Length: 334
Image (cartoon, rainbow, N blue to C red; front, side, top):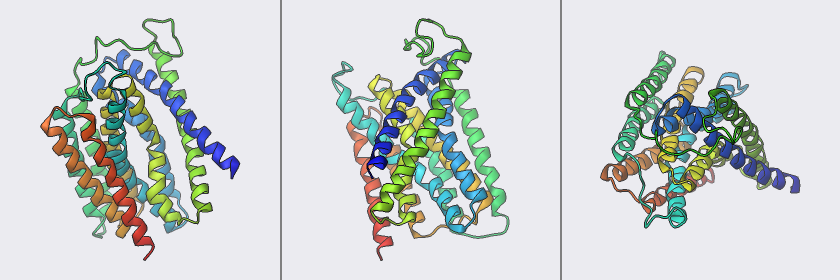
């Protein structure tokens, strides 16, 4: 048990350290590719951190030997967006409140394009409603609809690239950690640092999830309960860490863009894989996960559409994950 606790804490610390290198590297990749801050967060950073999770979902749904393993993959496809829409946004709000004095700000005002984030929530909500609706019905040609989710993500990326502006062109970046003396490091160095950091994040996340499952087993928790309630929190830890680091730097624009982009990936790519390789039928806990996610997204949309959002307004949305956990635990105890 001591070894499990050590590996749990060590892997969590390693994830945070690797995220420091990842966010630094991906910013320079975006700068060298002449991308704005929002697109760097929604596309580059989100795709990088979501890639390992999508690979795990693919292995579960495509090569799972029994229905239980495939169910874990489907649970991950639903649990990821729920964690991002609740815990990750709450972490951003809390971090802004705690760091406002260190950043020299009078309040925790969020400096982002509120209308753009609001549109992202609506875009996500439409896709997610279709995703949940497909889990309630059965028909022969359902697997073909997986391609629509991949097309939706491609359209989202295209839209983000079209909306990309020079919104971060004159903001001073921290030196690339692999080339600290270079004022304009080459793209290959930024890509190398980002790729290596991503590999460390994937490895450390795998260890972290394994130790979390061991702790849950020692507490006699159901494997399905762990897969639905605890594992999604662990798999979305890199996105949450990235957001925390960027907020501490006073760059909440990148933090929220990363979360928004990761939510879009989680709503489309893992869902497409699940629809391709499983019946994509939801039981009660999965349906609860989907409904709570939609409630959280609606709340976020209402918050962002008002503009002038402060960090404190994002913290309460994190409580919805507690509501979800309580309902699921109650269902498994029946």
